[in-house]
Figure 1 (tube, rainbow, N blue to C red):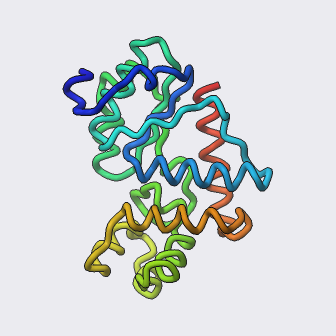
Figure 2: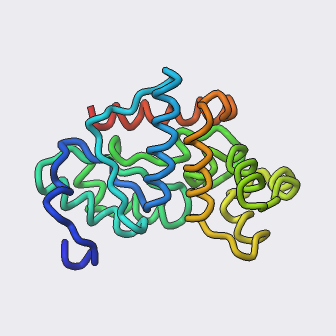
Length: 203
């Protein structure tokens, strides 16, 4: 399995007792950055003993989770609520390894209008602002008209050079110089709910 992942699974991967497997590097960046903002504001505190493990794709989450579980470590998975996330969440081996309570879905912490929210939708308004200010990407009017459409889909359709990595890196830069109170109330509540679920799954 380790060879099939195409990823250098050094022993350091197994150094933490509690592990949250996320779909990719951008998910890792969002969770890390927002958790720090909310910790500093006192609104939520992601357990510092939890290691966040990016799996590269939703499909590979099952492999990472299975390997970590086989090493008798505590494991939870965070999956988007899109088609790829749904397919991964329904894999028998993942359900068998983790149990339903440790398979976390973005939709369970989301309170907006998007039918199949991805992690970016938990930061929808802030990412619209950051993209405009940092990258010159203007999608606000489209996003307001299409409030049930995932924000990444809108960026992809409206911005010719859109990249999830560029967007997430722009958010990381923004997060270094801003506070949690500059997120919207809905965003803070959604992320507080998500962090609470992560802590509970890996207590």
